[in-house]
Length: 343
Image (cartoon, rainbow, N blue to C red; front, side, top):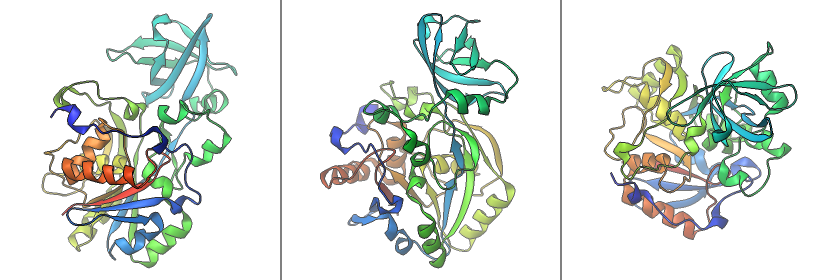
């Protein structure tokens, strides 16, 4: 499909620079497959779901994956994208034209990395030097990798260390938050439990590729970056049992949805999964695992707007986004949410 079909105009003031407080006070746009949309809040979620439904969260934890350093006198910026082994990360590098294979980048605080290999897409393999675990090195020299549409408007600060982390964050490895889950609080989780809504977790370590624009003119020419994820056997079994009993599987965030769809057989059976996925969902895709999606509002011409258009229909999502813009909804990572329930 033509990428320009997924374009829309977003006023810059609609981009949220801070989250709602408390988190579950954010607005929620209910978008059914047909009929009227409803303007609600995230706190209304328990009344929109049914007993036996299952919300599936991503328990990845964002690491301080943004680094600023030097190679000689040249400033070098690096955003870690995907872990390759204990000491090596694939990274997007700023000012990469100043790098050669074998160069050492000094990130300060005693943290150095070897620019080991340049990849075809322009990213680099960085090998961190020394014996200390890379996680400790990043805690010393790195900072929270806010999306460029926020970081370009204000500096990252200490508040972002907690704001840009979900209450489910348990497994280190993401360089972007699964932002739909940022809206959840212990109080909301208790209300969902009282309503008979079950919850499950999986892991997808979100990479920096989620922020990359689609530069191709046609979706068929766009290549997704791979991300690592896992669903254990017990979780897969409970999800299959819930669906067999008539419950709906509602993914919280596009990351949860993408991993669920990657782990599901054509007949709808969710399998245990551990490995990379580069699934790219566009209109025409037949969903196998999910019956709905809770998600924030996405960038125009992005793979994520393509995904929600695949779930609900392009015309329906263009109408929903036009409604959200007109009604003053806040967009992107720190913005408001939507609940998409296809027919």
